[in-house]
Image 1 (cartoon, rainbow, N blue to C red):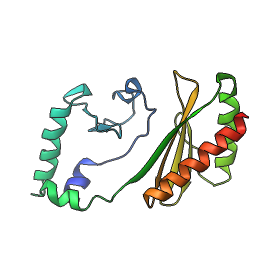
Image 2: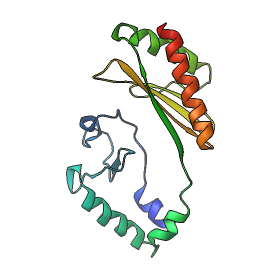
Image 3: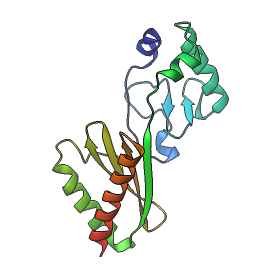
Length: 166
């Protein structure tokens, strides 16, 4: 599997979450694969849109480089413990929340850098706070080392937003 990774995974580019910004073609390096973290994939050399059937075909192609089975790969995928919550926030408080969350995140060193929200990195755990583009609310996403840890991170950061708003 390592040969397949070396052959196909050259670099990673972080983009905003909207599908329009994930469409390839604007970067300085050609992309082989674009994935959005929700199971949608684009293969730019085929066409610039999400395509499930092409994703299956290309994954099988990647696996065939090392004669690796999909079950072998699946066994080695670590379990992700994710949590998420939405937090209402009036439109006029969104900027204040973003500024204060960014200030809070900057206390953790390299945290805070996100393409459209604020990211908190805690080693193996992280939190991403995203303002909704269409509704007066924030989305809080977290990954923890256990389901309870992920929910605790979400609850803590959701409460931070509530305190800023009130």
